Image (cartoon, rainbow, N blue to C red):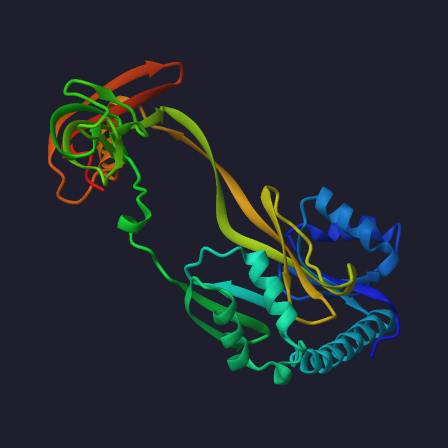
Length: 375
């Protein structure tokens, strides 16, 4: 094991000797090796590493790799690895211990019950958070007995969650006497109406906006009394769909080359306990940082922080609108067709093209004929 704390640097260049000679006038270079015609390696003291790298970069010398050697580096890595191993062992032991407890209560299923009310009831009726102390069958009976509108309930322990699945008794709409109005889901022009029951709010020739009421859920009987009734009708209308695409004759695209550099930190309570860094040599790049948890449901929150450098390149595009006019129009059409239902009949199609400063705008319109009262 080397005792000297040094950085071993490999470089690639055809005029490296002159640069290295200038560097040796300021600092010492050790173990210079000419590996190939244009590749060589040498060592410098760690304190001089920054000075050497700056000189190499300023003279356009490519740095292939940098490796740290010496007792200081070995000791730091050893203690870092031992600390990581001890931390993992402690985490496993704590995980085994705390896995015997319930940490979360989940309420699932169709329900018209306030979650807070249900959670309070469950918390007051379980004797312990210790898994083996929870009587699931008893809890199911207690929930069903205390909530009249629950038709069935199942309780299970999944992982460290107590999962309660509820099925609520449903009351037919006829018994409730409340019905929703028929509301238009589209902007449209009403062309034909066939009212079955309910009270109309539109007539033929009306322009209707999305969200407008078409048929109210009531009728006025011969005595002038308002009676709730489920609204039913067939209302046929012309429905309009549109999409817009903008085309720029000239634009600049910043594109990833596919190369990346990943730097990693393992953190505990916000402190870095292990690092794996590589020098970012990209001239143009984008940075993405993300932190993920290495363990779940543990008291010791180990986290992995990754900083990813993506190399990018700038690409200039020039494409006159007239050269791709038909393609842009078709793209706008396909974008509009997405809004249509399967097998829907198209009654009319048209588009407009507007030339603006630096770009063109294509608007595509499709008109269909459909029953807008159908739910």
